[in-house]
Length: 203
Length: 203
DNA sequence: GTCTATAGCCAGATAGAC
DNA sequence: GTCTATCTGGCTATAGAC
Image 1: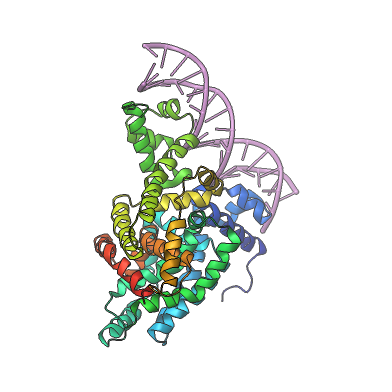
Image 2: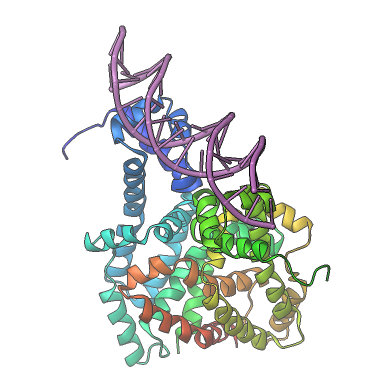
């Protein structure tokens, strides 16, 4: 704990920047809009963060560090495989419902700038999946679940939980429904997705 | 069929624009880069398409119309529910492997500009899901599959098939693997995803 | 149809007063 | 730390020659 409280401006800027970057991305965001939202002047943005690029990186890292440790914790605690799947589904969906732009933002910017990923990897900011993979392999060899590659199961879990947020607008249009009905479906998924996965793999 | 062949330039521009827009999005794309890629001059872009916005819309519609009719066809032919799931998985993954930027591009731009979606909806460019939903409801009531809301099953199918492309960079980093290994996983998914889904719902 | 040159605008960044 | 004013560069778009 180096500081008890940052200056109010710096926090205001970060919050405003988060909102704008998450909605519009690096290229679409405007420093002016961030300044307006933070209730301060454009020059002050540069005073605190030097450049748009650096402000963006601060936002990105902050966003990333909201998700990664949570994921790490869920995958590495002592619960059983089925419990983990339930945990992941419930907690993650609940969390992302509160931050719906987050996954899309991260994915979009990782695609835009894959170099950035490598930086995060070397800084070991990504969750460690070894334990989770071992757990799956044991569950397979002990006959608890049907044979499946840990990688594939992991992809399935992530896909079922995250895509409904990233592709929400697409799905809504396909289904011909509005926001409120879609939110009800998402709410339901907190429990149903885990059941769907477990039904598929359990013997 | 109004024309047998468009001018070569117009096609060249569209192809170049497709590449650039799909990789960088509307905001990140540069008219100069598109011109360079098409081997022509920047002014010619405006001669053919008037503005960046109109060129973008042409690309977007073209991309959208590569996916939607294919989806419509698969969901509305006469095969059984399980066959449709298998069909969708195999064909769609095979198709998107050839156009890996497509889903991300569509999703990103639909999120950026939800008004555009409504335009597409009113132009009835979206696939009709009624038949597919009925098929699921019948399969539930006849006892072929476990109870599940058609909407949820649809979301699951889409998520499992599309997210691995949209979030490919994220997943690769999580799994700590490189492109070639990831492509092998995707190849495997052409058959495995259908099995995963069917295992989950069949009684 | 295709090019060069340039207008005009807008956004990021900086200077400098307070 | 915070502001106003301004510089600078880059990008879309157009004018006009060929």
